[in-house]
Image (tube, helix red, strand yellow):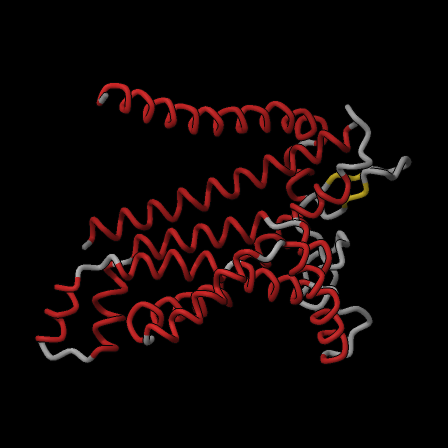
Length: 286
């Protein structure tokens, strides 16, 4: 029985690794041809995207890259502090009744489909931004950042709360016994001890933000501009979603869209590697 279970667990691990390898190989094989034809520098740093222009086609994705970076960073800056403070409140401060109400709301946020976030953002948020800042269109990077910040909250809250709950009570009791206040204990003992789990929450939030398409395409304007807080923009994901349906099979445009997917995949891998190295260095320093 034990050998059978060991074989099943091994098989599951191999399948998971196999899926990652297959996706990686497929994206590389599908994305490299367009990068070779356009040129790596022109593709990554070109500021003009016009694949359907027959006279002067252009395949520069720098606006998409910068927009995705700014949008994800903005969502993390807004969403992570709110999510982390909520997790701390639920884990260390809230009464069971209040915590139950907030948990229900967080679970509801996690279950709402992306298109509903986009619909509410398009109907409520976009007009509000347009009127507040006297713009011709409220569909902008700012609207995308706000929507993304809301969408990543459930992941950050749930994972961070679980990490905080896993901290041994002895750590906190020892800190309180030494004269530290409850707030000092939370931020100087509990939170550092849960650092690995909080970092995982941030990784999940970043992955959700940088990989979102449907909600963002509805509130960002989906225009291939260089990013500005109040201008209509296009993300890497929305570029793929908006053009894949009509890009001819085997065309350079379709291959370029696969190349965008490869760039997006590499971004997510890079973020995971950087955060894992950061966590490892912190543990070794501790």
